[in-house]
Length: 80
Length: 399
Image 1 (spheres, rainbow over the protein chains, first blue to last red):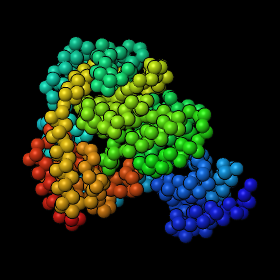
Image 2 (image 1 turned 30 degrees about the vertical axis):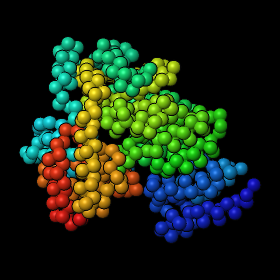
Image 3 (image 1 turned 90 degrees about the vertical axis):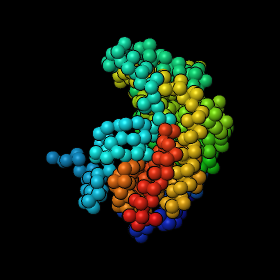
Image 4 (image 1 turned 90 degrees about the horizontal axis):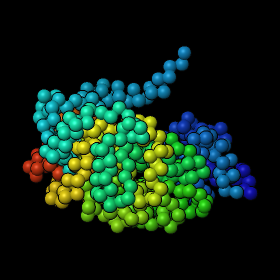
């Protein structure tokens, strides 16, 4: 299993191109509030993450993910 | 007390900002009189209609009107009941028969609107543990059908065959899968690569539903839609359509060859728990559908209109949603919402109505002036339209 820190760093790298606000990234960073992503940005970003880890993050799952930390945990589980 | 309306504040603010520029409210236009499928009186002024989806101009067809009047007198103004109780009249069955013939399919089911057809079919057939795979630019009725059902929803990038294929391959092989596509996407008027998409969907063992709302009557040899044009109609499990565009009235439908299709009449909640269409509406729909089977001359003229308008707008320097004319929708891309509203208003003052489409309904946050052509637009009207666009575009300074 991938180390969680390693996964967090990988996720940071994927978020960076979409981080137009230059927001500080931690487990607690929220996509809607801190990063100010609209639904289109979310779609594009999710597609990137899905292709990077060869997984599917359904819209139902996306609805539950608000923070970067939650995404890291979800992806670790999906990519197992 | 928490005001439950405070979540709408950004929307209210967007509208106030738009109206504060002094522009006419684009979303409260009233047509005082309608003279034909292509001309109405708006604000006391004769206006060419170029944003009605009335592609085949059937709304004032003599036979269609006569059928409606006759049914109104014979069967009354409404059914006051669900299709499964007291709301199925002879006319509803005849309308379904006309659809079966039009599409050459075994089953047809008429809903009260196209929105309800997507809502009902998608939510009913994709249940818990199943997957619905949709294009991110899908119509609201498709998203709402997914939200209403209990299936997992998987969106993929607009018209991207590879993105669809990759996602299908990542899903469990034995899970139930429904791929939902549209023939024509209504915002930009672009076509889906159905041939490839239906192929990869079938290879992955998915069922396919295609919404052909914006193609019925004029795309494909028999007007059955983009799936017919691209030769994959036999691989489409369900086709969804509407009466509120080419057919020229209101209502929705699903046609299918699935042997068990009739069970849908008992499990689609938007079919069961709503009143059926009035007798006059199904009579006009049936008559119109039968006439559309023989509409090849009108179809040819509609294509000519689409090509002329697309080429003309491009030559004037407008940025368009598609490189070539692909459907009867031509989307003119505006630089921003404020300029879009100004051009829209200038066109209305010129006596031309188009749809102003704004985010979030549009892809990529675009503001669009969406034009939909009609087979009843004369070649002179199309030239007139181009002149009005030129004057409005120059007045606002975007061309």
